[in-house]
Length: 348
Image (cartoon, rainbow, N blue to C red; front, side, top):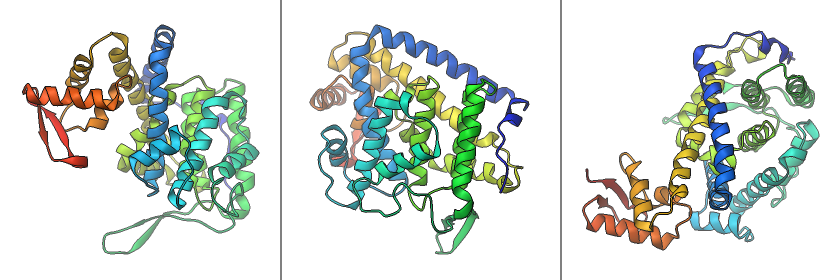
């Protein structure tokens, strides 16, 4: 088995792009703290939107889907799931809720990771819920002509429990001793987790839940207000590309984790920037029309009603719809398509 020793990370020289991303994230995290003190009630509205988006996006990456209305009912109203996909979605909702409420008392250990995995499958009868894999799994891709290519072979089942113990122990040691910058240690832990691929099913979703947990435990709370999973889903190709590049040589301990570190830090920083943008809309008391007008001014290209709702969490659906209608009538916006395929774009 490859050795997991995070101590070597502290002596590594990081390029200016990584150092710049880390500096920018700390700056944004400091700003967020100030914003939260100023408008805690309004910003709390962002939390429910982020939970819905995170649950929807993380499951959709794995092809687990239902309607947006049902997602909202499952997450906000905690309605009972109706089918297998909804059972998986409800499980993700439960783990995410637990992380939101109790991240500070969820240690990073194999047993706790297994317990979270068990909750992920809590609405389904899955005998492997909460257990490491019992069959060899592969990371593969299927091409348009139907042929499947194996991109990466994770650790075999018999090496998996010990490997999980070791990445948790190493992570806790370097974080506890402040040997390694958390924003470096977190992506490396997640990358190792994905290379181990410890479960028969649910590895991708668990990796995204663990990303949120690790960030919260290190004081980076942006995922509470802006969905990191939605950002990953929007740029899935970049995610898989960065992961693929960083997996080369992993078994021999010769991998270059830099592409994955840059990808994850870029995603976190983009979420912080979104948070600042949304705070600006919440901060000033504007009419619904003016709030939507400000939100629209930040959009480039085509966008949906849902895109505007996310930027204006304090407005009801009907208020957003009414404002968009007025902006179309006044010629500020153009509208195309009907029903669910309706899109808007700025006229100037």
